[in-house]
Amino acid sequence: MRKLFLITLLSAFIFSCGDSHSKNEKILFDSSGNINNVSVVVDNDMWDGDVGEAIRNTLAATVDGLPQDEPMFSMKQIPPSVFSGFVAKNRTVLKIEVQNKVSFQVLDNIYAKPQRVVVISGPTQETIVKEITSNASKIIVAFKDEELTEKQRRINLSLHNDKKIEDKLGVSIKFPTAYRVAKVDNSFFWIRKDIKHGSMNLMLYDLPYNAIKRSDSVVNTIIKIRDSIGEKYIPGPTDGSYMITENAYTPFHFETILDNKPTLETKGIWDVKNAFMAGPFINYSIEDVKNNRWVVVEGFVFAPSVDKRDYMFELEAIIRSIKIK
View 1 (tube, helix red, strand yellow):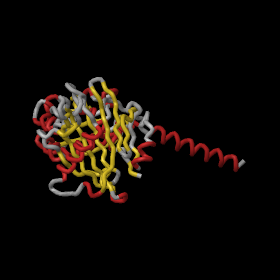
View 2: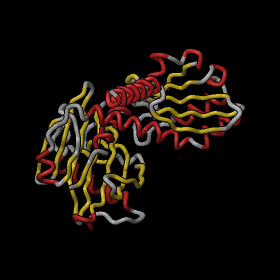
View 3: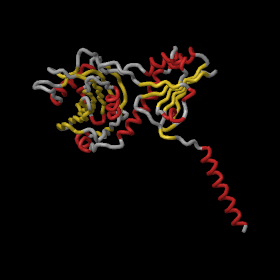
């Protein structure tokens, strides 16, 4: 009898703990929203004043390397009084709060999941503007990282088989089945996706390690290489036409990291020699010291008369999935 009593007591304790845990656990619904769309929770007066201007200067800054000015993020302003329920499920949220304490926070999965919420607070509009301005780069990185993760999650739902790329080039890269391999030549790959107003494109190839040397003229070296690749592999619509780099625009150049490797990032405008075609490109030259080479992966878009930000963002998300074997 004593043994039975102890078992019953223990069982009751276990179930009691389980019920307490389930009551305290917050149930989060799935987040929603288009890629690169941020909900800005701020009252109307601040949105129309200096705080709103600081937010727009940060989130609506133009994207580098596009032929027309396009904002980094699209925004929807929401007054705090209506920020609840379905409205609070957007994947990226910037929340402005008037509080005695000055604060900048990056939080995850507050109202839904996955979700990135940046909360900025201060006692006055002046202090809030200062927090927005001083943390502008952190705000952009927080939202962009979340959106890249979400875009890659969507891409992973239906992946193209990249075994041929892996076998010939020694890299894996995740791109959707909507793309097709348009051209293969040894270790060169041209991958394409047809869209309503044109096409989205990826190129992958490798170069000897001595082909690119870090110097003040490294951008010129990268441009010369991509122009030679364009002449050889990317023909235009007429005989003798092929893709080159538009020399009227100075390319943007950065150093970054891909697959834990030093990488040269170059953004600019391409056009077609002897034809009226042009668009943006983003080129990554990855330093693969172990294999004594550079791995080059580039995305470019042809989509005349339409916005190209989200097309280029998709290509960047694909490129950033690359793994060198």
